[in-house]
Amino acid sequence: MDMEQAKIPQATAKRLPLYYRFLNNLHSQGKMRVSSKELSDAVKVDSATIRRDFSYFGALGKKGYGYNVEYLLSFFRKTLDQDETTRVALIGVGNLGTAFLNYNFTKNNNTKIEMAFDASEERIGSEVGGVRVHHIDDLEEKISDLSVAILTVPASAAQGIADRLVKAGVSGILNFTPARISVPTQVRVHHIDLAIELQALVYFLKHYPLNEDGS
Ligand code: ATP
Image (cartoon, rainbow, N blue to C red):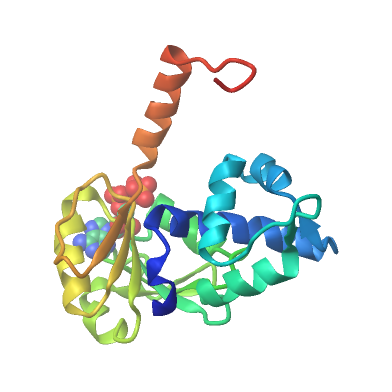
């Protein structure tokens, strides 16, 4: 995201890709406008929050009209740097890493895994989902101008690899390992523990069943 948008609260910024994806679908269906109620139903964010989010970037919906899809899309494209592809590295081509390489965020046209690294001789030199797998020893040499990395190595290897990534100039790490990694303050780590998320869902289903009205 560019610096001009630094004033947008982080919680709002996190929802932008969600809005963007939905609006893109609407646009490809030829829809010109959308109400906050429609958006709210689709992205599961309450309409008051949507209105507040949108007010940060000057999109004021009109009563009985809603929001102009084209305007919102062009704003999101600029804000999310959709015109510029972010090249990403993936470390650890195991089950999860392989799935990401095959998936490769093809529906998200602004991010692309361009190279992968692994320690296993079997995988090195191969291509997975069209992405070349390099030896982890060559990380610093190959990764030079990439600033984002996905971490799908075993937890025990996570901190060591993260240290090397940071030294090599990476400023964003999407950490899929259960390890809580430490990085300098200027580096951003987003942590996604799929096992914990699934457990939490099961726990909530059991202990906090939802009513039909969602309350
Ligand atoms: P997953 O956890 O993704 O299901 P897995 O069970 O197949 O994968 P893991 O042991 O978690 O395997 O390892 C994930 C991948 O990380 C493997 O391909 C492994 O070779 C690789 N790996 C392990 N240690 C390192 C390391 N220090 N540097 C780079 N890659 C590593």
